[in-house]
Length: 391
Image (cartoon, rainbow, N blue to C red; front, side, top):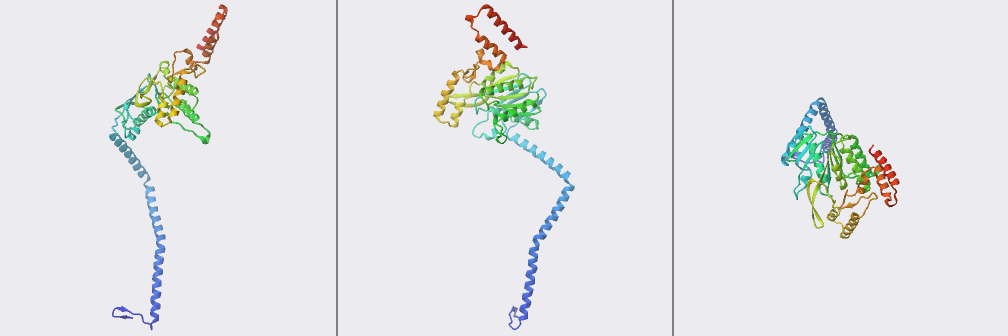
């Protein structure tokens, strides 16, 4: 009952209460239905809009993909240009005679991670004639792997149209870049580190061409010293010879005996990473220069890694013993970590079995009891055997 703009409940009018309750119930039910149905309506509207967008994209897919491709190219060019400006890259020149000449080349990634020191740039000269294979020796951590990888990266960056991290660069187009870097194994398939290494080397030797660029790091290190040295020696010879591959190659190794190949095979040049000794410590100068290293400084690197002093002292004693001893049945003597070719027997492992047989027969001859006729017979026999060797 309304009185003076106010509502009052009249106990004598129960039908009014029933009317208000029924009206309130209907309103709540309508509101409930609206709320519960909103989710379904929202999902239906979203799916309808999605169908419209999908149909529109399908009709314009070719134009959208073409636009995305152009945007990707623009993004790539802007990224390369930004990096080139920030890091002082230069525009490379190209030639067609197989040369790679880099002046003060740098590794584009490593130089950005060196914050507490200056990245040491290095020059590179590779061609298909007198500088086909650069044999790089030097201690661990001296920068051999970084140097080789930067040459590969500079060649790759130049061929994709990028500026390169160097003062100047003259490069030839290479058909492929082959690398054998790092150590790993595949235990699941039963392949050791050495087996995987040999598989990769085999793939390189089968597929590389004269126009390829090959990066080899520590071939043969996964097996015994002389097996590894023999494999590394044979691989180097095979790659260097023009009739086999003759590709531009960077070969880093701790087998200092391989440095003897410079005078034996055309196209091989020795390079080493410079190191300065200060007592028992070494300072890596990171600079590559002509010549070969005579030590690996492995114990010095172990010292830097924190090996206990008694272990290091014992290692020095063992190293001194091995350097003075004849550790090979073939007579290769290690002096300062490098095989010296002063004696003929020191290079027996690099000659044929027929030549070794001749040398062994000569060693077995007893001159004091030898008659002139016997001497002539032995000489004639060795002469015929030597002829077969030359044939």
